Length: 411
Image: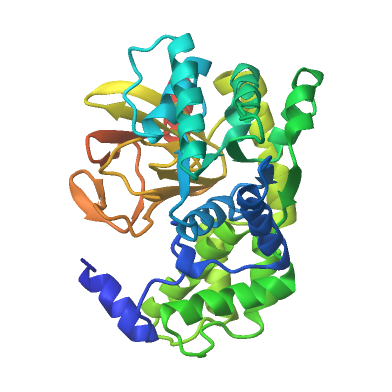
């Protein structure tokens, strides 16, 4: 059910749907030349009996949307296993694949898992069906799991291979694949392709396409002069384009304007705390690298952190440097909350030197702070964000450091 606020928003702009949602919706897919090529490579796994394709791309480049579109177009004679949870052991991975094929494999030992899977593949081939394994977020797979995938890719009848495979992941996956230990796996791969961001020309077409699908009927909701600025601040990354355009449209709606101009776009950029894409990306890599190498006690102190609890027990903790933390059910989020109450992309926290802002991403069940449903909320130290049975506790490190400095001054 659409909430009244969203209905007013859609009516104001004359739209049928929200045009810049982060959730991967095949109806909104814009096929740039690169995206069309990546999709064709995925489709080739069905055409060729030795189909084994690897697609890499930056976070937010559109890999998951491509996969969802590709799956929606498959013929009924293709049996699919789609694995998204990739931080698993070899046995857990094999179990995940068999669960996708309708088995209950949790009491099986490894030899039985492999025998069951091999038998299933041969039976499907004999019945004239094609079997496809898709692994998203594949950069997290261990070498041992990748070796299991190599062995599965070798299962064959007397005539041909019986398992098609698509691995999709972030760019660091290429470094892993190029290691000497995985030489045999790479030799099995038919095609490798890196999905780049959109060009500035493609960005214009991408925005027009999403607005048209949402019901704009050719009306330009973004002034022409805003488009180069959108490109400069998003680098052509689809997820960032969606975030900035959605924020700018919301600002125009609040000001009762029917088009986003430079003033509304600049206000959205300031609200998100973004610098231009090139400098922001370089800075985030430095901050993330420092956090990985030295942890919380480094000289690069986090501005805040969130503590993820489930039924009152601590599950995970995340530092919040300047930037954006996307929270949702699927592994392509920055923080995954695996719960049926949580949407694929549920909410995000945007952190700047001035504070952190929580934004709901049009989730189905809503985002709550201190039991009150919010769409956008400036977070305060100690705020509790409820996502079903999970809770996120926001801890503002700036407040803690300020109190410590005051105490030292008092002493």
